[in-house]
Image 1 (spheres, rainbow, N blue to C red):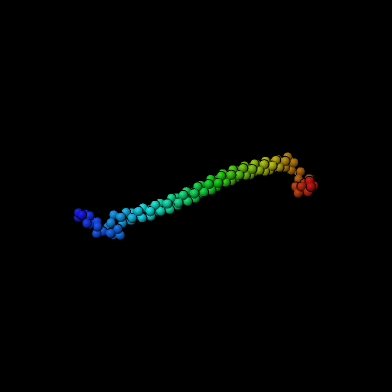
Image 2: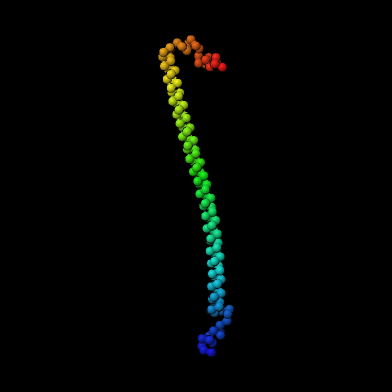
Amino acid sequence: MNSSDSDLAGVSVDDDRSPVARLRRAELRVAHLEGQVEALQEQVAALEAADEHRRAELAGAQADIAEAQAAAREAQARAEERRHLIEELRTQLSDARAVDPDAPARSGSLRGWRARRR
């Protein structure tokens, strides 16, 4: 037995300095780290799923915004058409009054015309 064999013979497996104990500690550490990696991978997968869900919600919201903007443009166009129609009718009424200023007195008020129409 040489001196290194005698040194190893005096060291038990449970001794922290033994290669077997160091190997066991390393294996435990590796297992612990693998567990942490798996947990992190699960967290990443959950975050990616949540991110994908939020992207889908964002796309839906953007589609809703586009529809609302289109509806607003259409409503604005209808309102503008009505403004033009009202302006045109006011102009026609003004022109008609200019041609025959006594016409409202002879035919009665506008309410009378509406009442007769019913």
